[in-house]
Each structure stands twice: as structure tokens, then as C-alpha cells.
Image 1 (cartoon, rainbow, N blue to C red):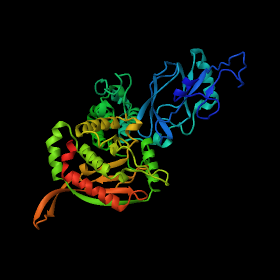
Image 2 (image 1 turned 90 degrees about the horizontal axis):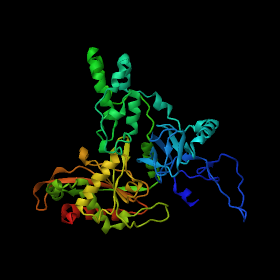
Image 3 (image 1 turned 180 degrees about the vertical axis):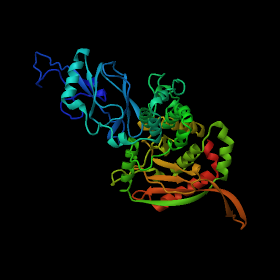
Image 4 (image 1 turned 90 degrees about the vertical axis):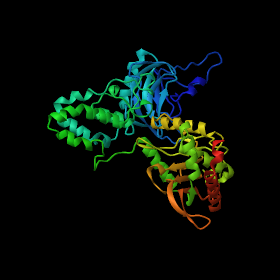
Length: 474
């Protein structure tokens, strides 16, 4: 029995989340002294696992195994999209995948059945009968949203107009084995790219992904469809070609439901409204930091890593700014300084975490950051890589934004919004006019824990580190 407690697919007879079905009716009795009670589970329900502490439902990205296939303990069965990442889910039992109850693209709440696993091939029929008697296991949560089914892109409309020549859409760019596909065993694509491929009848196996680690994203599918329809557009007098630019855009007036990640972001932002926050801004001169960055950029150092390192060193001197309040009655001085940095990805926002940023050297920190960004955009981050942050950075400076406010993530004490470094005319101490590069930072903090003086002192320390960045390379 202890080995039954190691799986996300756990049988039990008492909990609604952990259930098992049996081929015959059994009565639970205390074992007699002279006999051993042997419980033999024949058909098991595979459940939607909780892949993170904030996950309440998951979306089936793809089934790696098909109905009727034999499964071995430890094999990946299904790819599930949680609120933050796509993760392979393994089985901890041998058997046969008897019935898939939630198809690709379907959504199921955590703990609900998504498939049936039969112990032997002979019991597959029994599993199918069980699924049929319960309506196939379908539920409102497991069915794709009707609004998703009704939404059509402009590309699809163009393809429908072409009509008879539709099979040509499948003749897309050459076959490629994607680095993130486990040696070509499965196609790695974003959920939206898979949905779009079905709508446009594009064969994903023949699309070359341009996303991180070879992941196929929506623009790759659109490019494949456009390439296939281009000859047909030319033969029709260029009508379709004139319509194609609107294909990559947004269909005005359409209603699009939240993705799993967008839903999680929405819930977190609403939760943030219950925290009393305040904001403090500060102007920092970046001439020295810019010079250092130009000097060591060729060694793989990123500006994000420099800012994270400077912030971590400042937090080490002001631990209250690195603290957090979760219950409203106490706060915690966090033992580690983990800098979470907001990253925009396809269909949402995620905050990869640079753990112990005050202890790592700048070169290690930069390598780690590049690795985290690649994994984030490929939706391959593990939970500890995005939910362990103690302080958050949000940088819109690369877009030319000079200042903005950020919303405090739940469970943290502060977040710093970083604007662009821009040449600014300033007055020097001797009364002359000079030119310096300066950036604006605005910190949003939890006022239950952090007060104005705390933030002011922290920002003074941060400014000193950035304006004299010799400590950043040690």
C-alpha cells in the first residue's frame, strides 16, 4: 500500500479526489487473524493532478498515449497546462489506457477523472462500459468553451474561401525534429498553436518552430498556412493576398475566454486588491552601470542580471523589504533573497525566480536567467522556478517606458517597477548644467509590513550600489 501514495493518480475508497473502481463488489472488513485481506484494484481513474499550489483546474494540452496503449510505470501519459507551465504527467501503475474522458483542449478541475486505466487488456471493455454508464466522464468543466469553438480567425475565413484547394494547406515547410520534443517523440507547441493548427488544417509535424527550444508558436502555424495559400491567392487575382495581413491580427468584436494562465493572473490581481499598498519613486543615475554593462556584455552578462544582483545586495541590508505577510497577523523575514522577474510570454505573464541572487556571481546569475527565460517561453518551468520569489522586478525600460506602477503579487512584500535609462539634463553640485543617464524606479509595497522610511532607506542603498557598481562583479 505505501507505494500507492506516490502517484498523482491515487486510488482510495473514502475521498472524492482519490478513488478506485473494482471489478467486483467488496465489503471492507477487519482482517481475520488467520487470513490476509488482499485488495486488488482492477480499473483506476486517472485524475487531474495539482501541479502548483495555486492550480484549481488544468487543461489537457495533448495525450502522449492513445486509447488501448500499454503503459509502464513512470511513463508520461498526458501533457497538462497548469496556471504557469506545461508539464508531463506520469503514471505510477502498469496497465492499459482504456478510456480518455477529457480530450485535448478540454479543462478539468483538480482531482476529477480524466481517463481510466485498466490493469489488463481484457478489462478494457469493462472500463469502457463504466465510462458509458457515467456519461463518458464528461462535465461542463471538461468541455471546451463554446465561445472558443465559435471563434474563427481571418486566416480560416480565407482558407474557407479557397475551398477546393484546401489540401494544399498541408504542404508546409519541411520536417524538423524539435529540440524540446524528447527526440521527436512528441510535438512541442503552445496550446493556441495547436488549436490554430486544427482550425487551419495545418499538420504540426511539418512545421518548424521558432520559439525557444524549437517550440511551435501561433505565428509559425500562421506562416505555414500563409505559405500554402500564397500560390492560390496569386492565381485568384491577389484578392486573398490583400486579405492576409489581417490574418495575424485580432478579430475585432470576438469574445476570447481566458487561458489557464490568464485566469490565474486574474485571480492573483483581484487578490492583490485586499492588500493595503503604497508607492515610493526614486531617480537613479545609471552612467556607471551602463559603462559596466558595455564592458562585460560580451561575456554573457545581461542587464536584468545586473539589476537583480544590485537589488539583492540592497535587500540584504534591508531585510524588512524582503519580508512577506500571508495571514494578516504576522510577517516573515525570508531567509533567502529570491528575485522574481516578470516576463511576458505567449498568452500571459510569468515570473521566473533567480534564487539566492545575493550570493551568486553575476556570470552565473546571467546564465541562469537565460535558461529560465527559455524555459518560461517554452512553458517548461518547474513550480519552484516561478513561485519562490520574495521580491519582484518588473522592467518595461526596454520598451522606452520611463515610469509606471506595478501591482503587488500576493504573498510578497514589494515589487519594483523599472523604467528606461535616458539622457537627462541635470544641475551639478557646483551649479553647472550637465548630462547624465537616469532611470526612474517605483516600488509598490505592503504597508502592513513595510513603511515609508523602510522603502526610502532601501532605495538610497540601491542607488548607491548602482551608481558605484564595483560590488556587482564580485
